Length: 333
Image 1 (cartoon, rainbow, N blue to C red):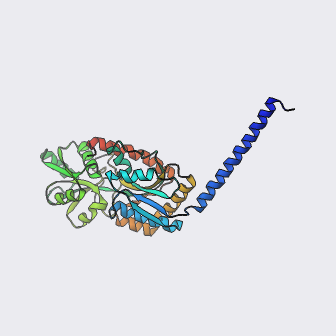
Image 2: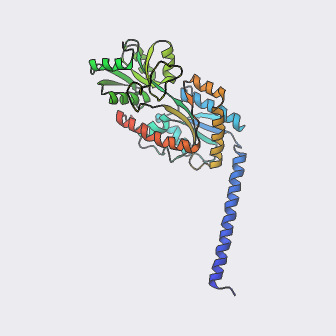
Image 3: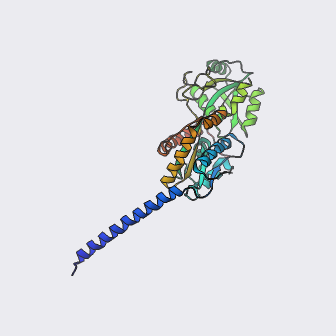
């Protein structure tokens, strides 16, 4: 006859064996799912309208995934509310790897700081898959501003306190970085709010404003046309296509390295095996000359990371951009 203790020991042993078997079965199922993934077309949400620079680069990545996974990748543009509608849709999607988010510094780092009541967390709501590209910013002045260098511009602004200005739309890198420049230099520059960046740039060229710090992806064509004069790169290294333009750091403005970026994420809870598979395919695609050329046309540069490296990068970037939003006093309308 078994004692009570013996009966309990036997039950514990059987439960342990059952649990171990269940874990092995789940592991095998997970591995099988990763091997068969993706069995269906993948949807990649872009929280911006079609045709813009973020959408264009998303389509480059969609082609990489399509070629590497042998499955259709469909772009779904979900703009609105400063990109928060599309990001929320991706955050609440099933974590099966069939819905991805093409995120950016704007949608994941700036928007949550502008819209404090969003129903997602830019870090906790997502599994970090892979970074895609860095998008550098450049300080420019229009031809009607006589300054040929950044020190000359600073001297000119000091001679004309409160008379020089900059324009941009709310919560965009041009606004945030211009306020950072104003803060670091102590210049008395006036901010003019705009509803769209296109109009602010048109007015600057037309003589209404005096400077901006915007992405090369937007400004490079105007620089090549001679309509804008680049005075400083807001990054750690000079840009290959503008070798004579110094970095802001070289000009004495430390900690002025603020690249925008794009990346791919999945809903939190997406199996690690699927995340790793996506990361591998994206990184292989980013190393190809074809992709590098496509990104170069967008004046951006490929950035490859592991999911863990991307996670650390995102954890650094979210508070950095949030601090710039606070510095500029930007609030969603």
